[in-house]
Image 1 (cartoon, rainbow, N blue to C red):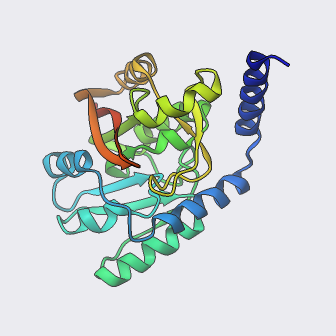
Image 2: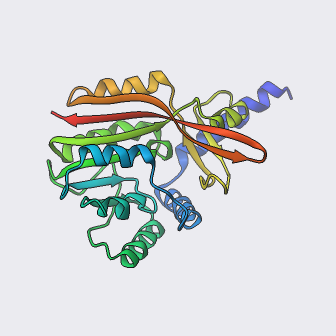
Length: 247
């Protein structure tokens, strides 16, 4: 059996696994990640800087695919009320414990971000940062459409899409025949054994083109977000960053 055939078979098997993952299986995997990240999940500097610049005191903001809710407490200190939305029960337990410890109040929502249980124009802002990496690719546009629906006019979207320029993608893609969806198990990265999407310029510009139909683009960039040590080697993580204002 040739190596190329083995690689093709592995890739087809992996992609089939991605398609067939049920909502229950995804919740279980996200529960594992939430427990792994308990007390270790730091807010991203780009989100904090954008929030400080664009979210006013008293703003009501959704964090979509919130995980352990790292922005709930961080932005509460700045007078911003963040509602975390996630399908993981364990993630919500971690968020609740953190809020109780810090004296932060507010709603939490266990929901599918492609079907948000909110009325049109309910929020001043939305954070969709890194979440696309954990979604089925076909659902990302649905989520972006829902964000547009629930934001108020002049509401701010802060979005981040993990880039194929990231070292962790480069290390894994050779086993997946250059697929932009790879599987990573790494306790240091706290990513868990789930399919992870990465996005090239064409992917990102495609999302931007659709978003521009209902938003004014404020910032758009490709930036290195972090450097982490893997053994004796520093590795980079890149994101496509988008900040936009709803028309």
